[in-house]
Length: 338
Image 1 (tube, rainbow, N blue to C red):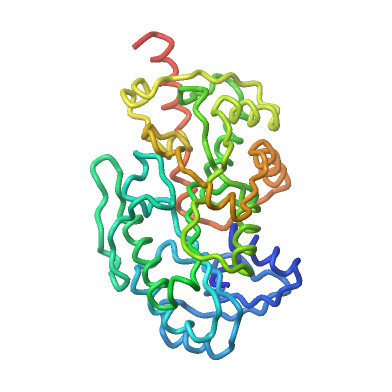
Image 2 (cartoon, rainbow, N blue to C red):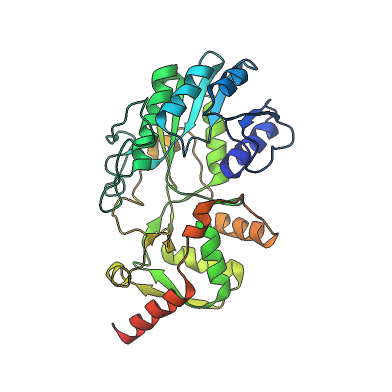
């Protein structure tokens, strides 16, 4: 495993050990701690010498790469070149942002991708005026191509999740909603209340990744909850599990935008684009993806938080959640009809 110390990587490492697998993890040893039972190898995947040192400790049946989020394609390419003769298969964590139509259109695995060469540097791509496409999406396409071109497409599985939630979450989306629900009072909520969201549980992504690691499939899989949960049900569950005496106050997208509420961050999981929660995961479901009810994810995340669960420090945590003073001003404007 490249990564393996926090959130999805940690979950995969723990689950692989539970299956009786021998697990080697490769990371810098700076974020989180190595899971007990793995064989840790510390190094920097952007340093070619470290990668060749790692390759010399193989071979392995499979690489599961959960740590390429902030890497340029050319850095992923160096990793793939160094390890290609030491591994049988490669399971690569990518993102739904690789599609040209994200987040405007309904997406399947056959939807067209953005364009990015496998050897691109960190400057390749652009972010559109409305926030799509993103440099991140271009970069992740390049990372996919780096692996597929180096190992051959028949040896590579590409997992393209949207939003992953659950115990250990480091981004802070679900933890913010849970903490806000616990505080009670009028709760600013993004309408329409019946819009369904499709986050997936980290434990279900880990199970699917391991299943594909030992399987024979290849190519891309969209990872999204096939059933999802309506936003009103999501907030009701957050209030129920935390015991918060709050009541959602639903505001239209137009009202929220007029008040300067930032999509995706100030109200986590809210985005107005039609395709953001319209991701077809049919191919993954046919290949064995099973998603637990999101109510279970909410409940288990709160239990983790209540037990003093702490994620690794990550700058994205601070990006999420609307300031209480700003929320109060928005709520006041809604009640006065402004």
